[in-house]
Each structure stands twice: as C-alpha cells, then as structure tokens.
Length: 435
Image (cartoon, rainbow, N blue to C red):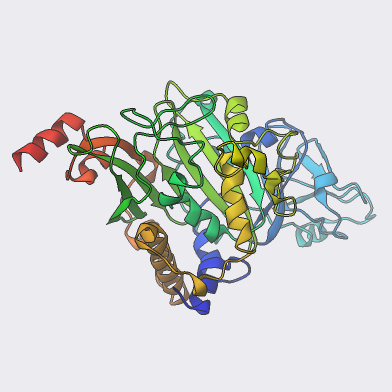
C-alpha cells in the first residue's frame, strides 16, 4: 500500500504537479498522423495535461499545435477555417499560424504589429514519427532532442493503431499494461492456452503456450525505467522449459508488450488530465503485421461502430460495457467484447482516480509495485529539483528507439535477460549448458 500523498504524486498531472513536470520533459503524442493527414483539413482537438489544444496541418504541410481558444474572445478554433497557411476563427475572423502568431485581425481597424504580438497564442513544437504527432510541452528554451518510438523503424503501412478515450487516471491504466498476471484471467477467452511453442495470433484470438495463471516476476531496473519477465510453466515440456514474457516500461507512459508470431505490440497511456486518459495500442512488424481495419475490429475499436469520431466508446461503465451474461454462461469469461474494453471495465470500475491506500498486493503484482516505487520516487526527485527520469540529464544512455520485448520458451532456470537482450537462442542455450 501507499499513502494518499504518494497516490497524488503518482496520479496528478495538471498545473505544476511533479508528475506533470515529468511528462513535460518528454515528447508527448497528441494525436495520430491519420487524423491530420490532409493539408487545410479539419483541426483536431487534443487535451493533454489539463490543456486544451488544436492540432492542424496547414497549406504547406506544416503541423501546428496551439491553444484551442481564440485569444480574442475565447471561441474554439476547432470550428475554424484551415486555409492559406493559418487557422481562422469563425467568430471575428482572427487568424493564427502554426506557431500561434496572429496573421490577421479583420475586426480591428488598426491591427498593428504590437497588437498582433500581444495576441499570440500559446503553441508547442511538433514532430511526426511512427504514425503520431508529438508535442514538446516543456521549457521552450530547452527542447529535448526528439527520439523516435520503438516502432518508428517499421514502414508506415506496417503500423496499426487503436485509440480509445478512457475516463480514469493514467496511472491505473498503465498499471494494467504492465500487469502480466491479469491476462491469464481477464483475457482468457481471447488468449486461450494451447499446445504451441510460442504466442500466436489468429483473426479472433491469441493462443498462448501456458495455462499457468500465477507467473513468477523477475525484475531488471534500467536507465529508462525497468523491464521484467513473467515466468510461467509451459504446457509442452514443463520439466525442461520455462515460458517467458518480457515487458518493458519506458518512463513515463510507454509499455513495450511481448509480441506474438504476427506482430509486435506497444501501448502509450497519455494523461489528458487528472481523470482522463487517451489509450493507444500499436501493432507493428517489419514484414508481417496486421492491417489497420483488422486490428481495430479485433480490439473492438472500429470508428463509427465501437467508438465515435472523438474516440469515445459505446461500451461504458453506465451500460456495464454491454456485458453479455448469456455469452458468459456459454464459456466466454467476461462477456465483454474486445481486450481493451475488458481492461477499461476494470480500470474505470476503480473510480476516476484509484485509492491505492486500500490495495492488498500479491506476489504477482510485482511489476505494479515496481512502477509505483519508481514513479513516486521520480516525482519526489522532480519536486526536489533533481533530474527527470529517463532523460539524458538523469544519466540515460540507452537508445530507447531500439528497445524490444521478448516472449518464448527458454531452458528451465536459464537467465531470461540473455533472451530479452535479443541474443540468439542457440548462444544463450550454450551459455546455460556450460554454466
């Protein structure tokens, strides 16, 4: 358990909170590139760390991320006309460029340069990579070098993204992403045990080579966060092998999840404010992969069917996520369609911000406990003026763009880190035998 003060340090991201400061020292995804693919297209709303912004691509293809509300009278620029290299407010015609500069004030007879300068909107630097538009929301005088995400090396057509809004705090969402134990229960109908040699992917399920619901957790702290292995007893050769699922937590909001035989997986859990999170689930692969439409259908996240154009889902806490009790009687474990909705039912049922002072953690919650320890300590460091976790100033040397997870069989008792480091199975087995 943790104290209420520690819970607030972990969860609160708005205004000048330590966790919000941590987030602002990292490039943050604001939206998917597909949402702003068109020059002079529709502006997109984005809420990040309690701030309301609009993202747009201008006539020349430049990306802008500016305050949503017009500097004049506060009308939303999400309604604005995106034209001639700027976003024009419908109310009185004031126009702003991608850097928030005022280009035109048609309602002002003497709109001089001084007045235009005073009316400039807040704006943030942008980058585009890996299917996302990224913002730097920290100190404008100390913009960190942008480092592409771990999937950016994959061709764009091999990256598929699910995006869903979930009305609860970012930390309880991220704890779900790094909790290997829950998948054996909550997602058991989607991830059924099978006599296979590694995790597979079909159009409807992810068969896995173990029916072990109580993984043993092994940790390795890193300069970017931590990685861990969930060790399970496999169905095939249980006396000779261990089944390993290796997960990486890249502070502050990214998780690299164990892959299957068709695609690799990552999640980003982005704080919109203290009690709302944007959930991104990325499936990617150099040569195989899964098509965007197929990925969204598998996850129950098809736009216009499962979620609306603002990525708000039809399955909610108010309608019990459309849980089908007859399906449960027929063998479906949850009666809830889609892995994300199954997760969100659990996260949202905890309340907008979970009260961790009442938790009773078990051995299998090791990764959750480690996340809390690391990020609470990181928040205290920031509060005390120390360097921010997972930054060069804090001593990180790892190239996070090259990080990968691992899943598969290894010799029983072997060091999982040899495999997680991406070394050849043959080499690792030789070292194990020679020890």
